[in-house]
Length: 288
Picture 1: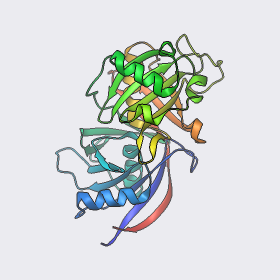
Picture 2: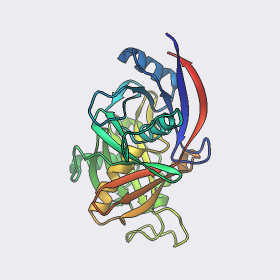
Picture 3: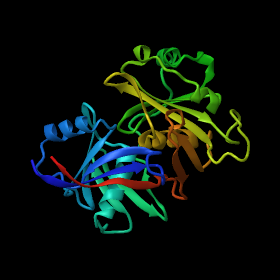
Picture 4: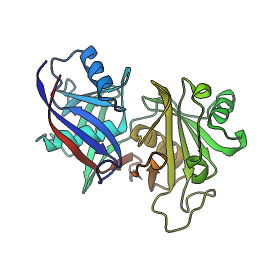
């Protein structure tokens, strides 16, 4: 073990402790998968990442992303938080974009004034969910099947299942049953503001949607404060289906006392970008 440069970054917020934190070890060379997993479990955060030299042409760095118990091929808030830490530590991209190598391949990250944004990786699986899973999800969320007004596979590495409820209020009121939803990663979205035809909350609302993300945790069902991968997949589904405009802001973390803001945009080329502010809360070294 040795001391390595380290940052803990709060993502999808410009205000410390209001977003979703990620632990970033900026020098992961020489660490085994087991050591990375052990450190991740110890942090008790939803994810920890390890920056390594790239092995693919065109990449600026390689990122390995872990959550408690397993490695992930991709995750959104660790991507933005790690890029933020890499740039703060003096990293310089080779080209117009920062290019991250990870389990899903190369991911482009652009700098938009006061925030970073990643290009949403392609969905590994899309299309409607099977009816038997929808019945299970509805029961696990404690809602009627008729309350689910839209649904789709949202698998872009993490195997999310996306469902839309009638309103943001319904989303915020959820009290999921972890015994019923065991083994499922479920993302729930509810319209806010004037988007779509359901859940209007008035023209003065800055956010179009309220999002919540539920997944199996070490102690039953867990909830993620703000989820980049889920919002990326939801955007591909919602914009593609005409359920959301090509540019919007999603709110996530409200039910946990956070105030995450996820900026979504489909550009002229049809590429979807998921962005948010990041702020370093801890900087120094860590013994790994």
